[in-house]
Image (cartoon, rainbow, N blue to C red):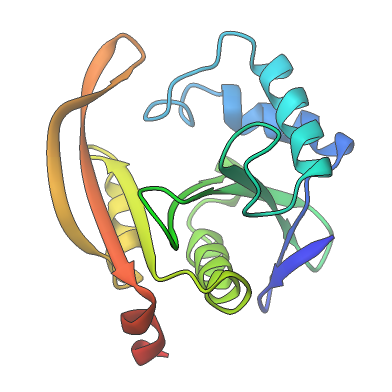
Amino acid sequence: MIFATSERLILRRAREEDLEPLLVSWSEPAMTRYTGVKPDVRGFLTGMIADMQVKAPGETDPGGPWYQFIVERRSDGAMVGDLGVGFGLPGERQVELGYRIHPAHHRQGYGREAVTAIIDWLIDAHSIHRFVGVAAAENAASIALLRALGFRQEGYFRQSFWCNRAWLDDCYFAVLASEWLDRR
């Protein structure tokens, strides 16, 4: 099932054949620097894919409020990454966004294009009022993306996230749907 599209991308439901490409970005040290590594990443991703196949975005069961979308390139069907939406986080008609673009596809504008497409879709399909992005303070690329999309920094939390045996500072960003639509 396709949920959102852009000029170059399709945001769709996860499938079993997505497991191996997802393993790259969910286990590679450069990609888990700010998110940490799951103890059994293969088992976690297998369960996540199974959950995404039976639930719709916005449902909490199975697996909680997060829905993980696959980001696929239209031209050749290559998976370029994945994008997570935490429905109801931090509250009613709000979502937290998370995104991963595979290293081979960095610096090609896919992150910006995927986040833009999902925000547009979430406003239309779910009447989302507020979008939150959380980035490790050292994650300059993620912070630059959020700022480029018009998110404003609303907080800086010192040593708030335990990751890879170290405390990281987190930066909280947000944009309202009304602000997003005014810029369109």
